[in-house]
Image (tube, rainbow, N blue to C red; front, top):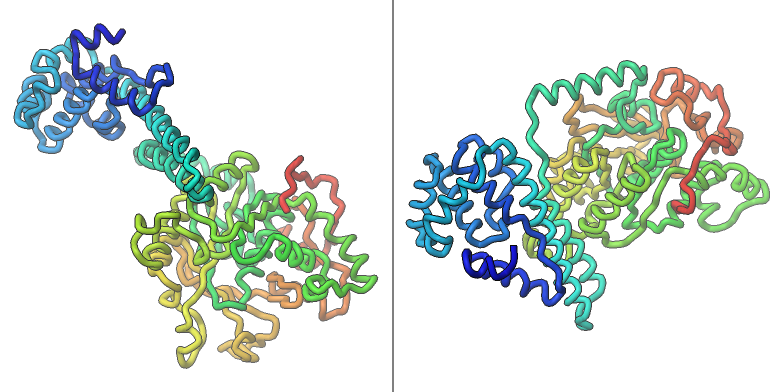
Length: 527
């Protein structure tokens, strides 16, 4: 179809083509288009009422390349919304009411759309081709804008990167929606998953935590869940998530992405050194290691070299950056869980006005985005959160409450699980409320659990090693021994089974730090 034919028979198309070509500049390349499919879709909509419901969930008026077709589709949508019949006559009448009939090409053009096909059988396929061409045009448009901005020296490079990423993601969010599913299809999928779980004979259906009491409560961190872990500063939030990240990545060979907005990657690795070797963390951070400790450090940390743990310590990470990085990590490493330390240090984006004018609305946007990311990648996302000072000023019990979540009530709404860490020692208390000793102990409070019951789980906190573990595990320091730094955990050993936990708790097996079965990522050092 050449330009002369277009100009002679259908002048409206020529105007639309020129408009797009002006955006492109003089590239000498034809703009992505599917005019014949546009006409086929519009014709099908006017001869088959059932086709309308299929197409309206896929296309929008601006997706049509030809301006006349945009007007026709817009008229069809208005008729559908008003529950009016849709055919050549009603569409022509609607365009006449809107004074768009002549601009569209007249009644003859509308009538001609239905004469180009005999059936609407393939209308959904045709509609998706129209949508794909629109996406290509949008990519070209945004990329040209990005190119022009790149030539402007006055633009900030980092802001341009963020804006470029935002433009590309906006195309995905606007056009690539998940299809609705019939209940029967979902039931079949759920039954297949349950069958696989039963046949695997594993007690855990999600990503293991490595702390038996918590895994028994959760069944592992579940796919698509947003888990919020909140506590006051110094309560041990980072220590807890680093412990479970280490357990999942090393003991269970699960690829984990850890985004640290507060601590550097080196500081986190120092903590991992302490967890693995049983050397007090302050000795490592200060470099005051004895000869015995130095030997133990080299002997016991070799497993970290091949750990499936990817650490990103980018400060002030934006939602767009996080989403892009997680998508790449999912594609490259097939990550099974994301940990973010912590939520309040994230940024919604460069243009905060789009997400409201204050920090509370920005946090709401971030929490919604984290939940959407968990659903998109179908993996759990654990995000740390600060608590307000109301906990400190409140009389009586210092146990945190859901109302103490800082800056936004939407965090509670978006989360599938909300966990708090409570350590009586933090408030100089010797016992819990039930008079059980609080020395070296903590409670993980399940204040919200969309998939199960709430309640509290006691765990041990070994502060000298910044490590959380099961209550039954001993402390390195109590016996003055470093003989069992990994608390009896051997990699890839029947995880999720009662036998695994029994052997770990009873220390029947020693940690093997030179296990040749551990596979790392070639040419990509996580740390």
